Image (cartoon, rainbow, N blue to C red):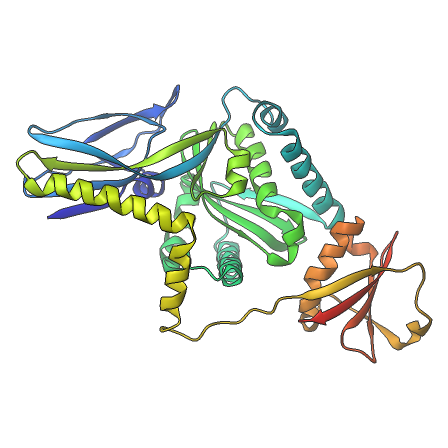
Length: 387
């Protein structure tokens, strides 16, 4: 009786639309790229629900005889419409606060002055071995991020779906992967989907050790630069009401559930009303973080709770090397034995504006929680209180 589909997902991932829709563009832009029309025969006994329809689209509906269309608001989405802007700085000046602009520029400068950073967008081609490496790295970053937040992530539950399809979509220029590298190490990764001059930023995550550097904002900043060079006018950040999206976006839109049913189908109206109440309840639970608490409680009955080590440390400025420096041994941060030191050391780089290549790291051989970081222009004692 019920036929449901995710309009948003099939549009961006597959370029599919039902034959009931004629999608022509967005705002004052037309979509020149031809979409694949799914030929669906509506039956009077069925109720058809096209969920997550983004209202920024320009479209016509070919409503069948004796069928009705009811629209129910699901949630809100966030997007960046580049309009006439030619550079990111133009967009900053026209749409973002002065403080937001300063924060992004400062974070980018700090990142690039602390590490050997490069940015790469894979669009049209990507070697399969490197693709496999990048996807594995992204999966680990997502898992670590949501373990830290004690939240659930639907992406990980459907990970095979993304791994199986994304490389082929990249080769067809229907998807892209953006990566921020420190040397050869990916520290931020984003998967995007493309339709003509529209780009949807679908999945992204970053290495938690670089938390001070605001990699999520730098990702958007650098992707917007790429968009402007590649005639992308619309950067869709999708749903999820986060502060960073509100700071970046200049267009907030609605997602709707489009419900089609025959006028003599008595269940249609009831179904529409139930959907409206359902979305109101879901939005309330999300806004108050109640949904994650419920899911986390249910997860306790499925598997043992994973624990996360939270770092507690101090950075103490020194004027000279301690007298007992002979008790310290020089160590290599790239050694996985010292993996736990990377976040505090990277925090030090951010705070003191040092470059990773210009520091020396020493460990007190008589203590397992005392270290010295000697930079080009700074000297600090790193005390690990708990890890």
